Length: 129
Image: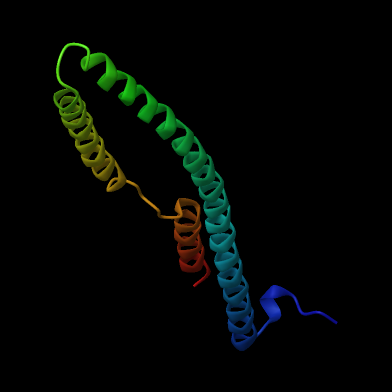
């Protein structure tokens, strides 16, 4: 025969609370693992696309630079044309690297959903106690 909630002893109530907290902690860890796994899988796939796309774009970019050097060489010495193109491309590259570093420092890798549910669990625990 099951006892009603009001008939249970303090020890039984604490036992139930401990069991519920243990279950809740396991569920939170599972949620965090799932959330981080999903993010890692998406990032891995996106990095693959970036790498292949970057390699193809790089080949095209080098071809365009060679064409610019050849075009400039029609009006100036080859070495000067190559030097000018190299300096311009280097300056653009430096600008992009600095911008990328700045943007990367603003990325927040925190699993927001897990943090939110932990806050909710904390409030629930306060209500239970």
